[in-house]
Image 1 (cartoon, rainbow, N blue to C red):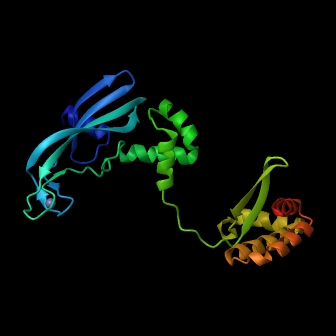
Image 2 (tube, rainbow, N blue to C red):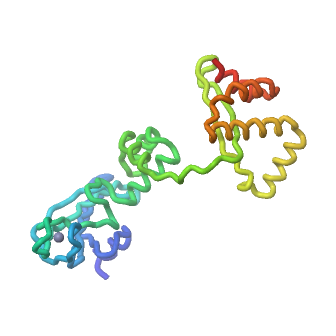
Length: 248
Ligand SMILES: [Zn+2]
């Protein structure tokens, strides 16, 4: 096994990609990569081609290695499409296992940055990423976070409502939490039941929360005033505060 193959394995490059050269520049590692696939598939007609027209170099960021930022210099080939009736006479080979078309970072670096952004925030990620050997701007990361697919919304059966003051007396926020009891383990369920037994207010809060969810789901705007009135009279400080903050 030659050194190039070993380096490819260490960097976990997808099958068929090889390293031709490495350059270390301070905290930067520049890696020249090329594809060994003999054929490429035309994206329009699907025909395979082995006729290389030309080569160009594409620069993409990759996951850091041993504290060094990594830049891949990908030598990509342009192939001539063999199908005479294909509107695309020439196409650039795709490397979807490594990087998407026109992307400036590899799939795995994008995934790492998105994970960092989801765990912190775009602004924090922008500050922290360089110390991890990655570079990203907050607006770019925000755009990627918005592209992350979310599971479809489900009907909320058990809702927790809380509110807090961003700035007391001026600006309030409300927190709605899906408290699906089925997802509690046995110990947590017992704890909830003990709390319900010890605090009768919990039943009232539960009933009002359920009524609130039902009102939202069924779009019964006309019932809001009645619900706010019940919340104010419930004797539960959080619900009373929530109702009064939302009253005109
Ligand atoms: Zn074609």
